[in-house]
Image (cartoon, rainbow, N blue to C red; front, side, top):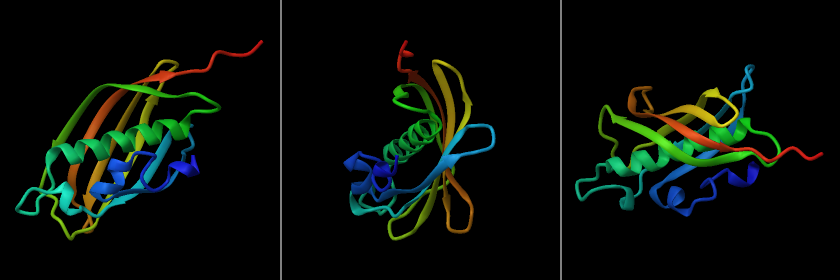
Length: 141
């Protein structure tokens, strides 16, 4: 998983200013990931405000990373089934934000996760919840 730190293996994450820094598994075997978001010009409209779609890309990636952190072997997320994103306040260029994703529930085929972007003052900027299809490797005999 260390190879996914930074841009998460998706160039768009780095291009818009996102970066994953740490990940792990909590006491209930549920994964989490943390990172930062330093919005670039590409992430923003002409007024320097981050576009809603950029929030969605980062939050989706954070939830996927958190789920993959909880999975073992070659198991991995396969697809985002459903995702809801809410923006509470604007994010602006030249500001630094924290990014966090965590697994809420993990079953054999489905994972439920949530993610957030917060300001340096700890104020919630945006959040998302999602449902994801999990691919499990067939057990070897």
